[in-house]
Amino acid sequence: MGKTIRSMEEFEDLKKGGIYRYYGDLIVACSLEFVGSLCITGSLSIKAGWDIKAGGSIEAGGSIKAGGSIEAVGSIEAGGSCGIMAGFSITCKGLLKYGLKCFAGICTWREISEEEKTITCGKHKGGIIEYGILKETGLVENNKKKELLEKANELIKKADELKKTAEEL
Image (cartoon, rainbow, N blue to C red; front, side):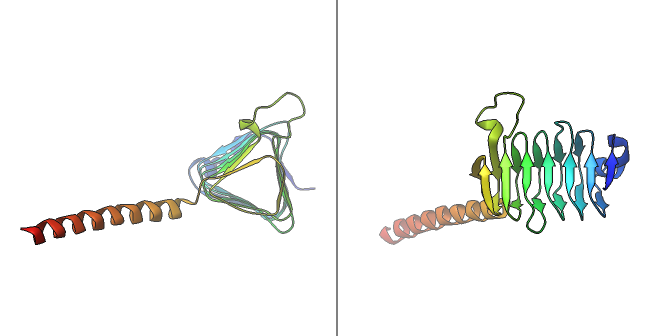
């Protein structure tokens, strides 16, 4: 059946930036908001419309389900052939990885906007987005590399212009 968490007091280490590891299924009956990373060998399920907000990554050996939004500064990974399901948006700066299906914006109790059913990630490496709108932003490492290459090309162009001016003198 798994362990049920009813308050954030049980996640004190996560608030400080640590890694919370749980072996088995984890059911949470409150919002999760923390600085660290959450690693679970089983499924992660957030009940009653609550959100998951991580300053690190969210990793589960099974599925990840939240009645509200799922957000991570790092990556979001659901293990094996399991998927991810959120009542509202799914957001991460890193890799979004899962086995079979992903659903975002499946709220059943009110109308939702396009933004609330958007899946924003650095890179999508999953199965099928069954419901939601995918928006890939590029991984931070790739953006940094692109930015450095653009600066290098600008410097090379300026150097060529200076060389040409010097040769004309």
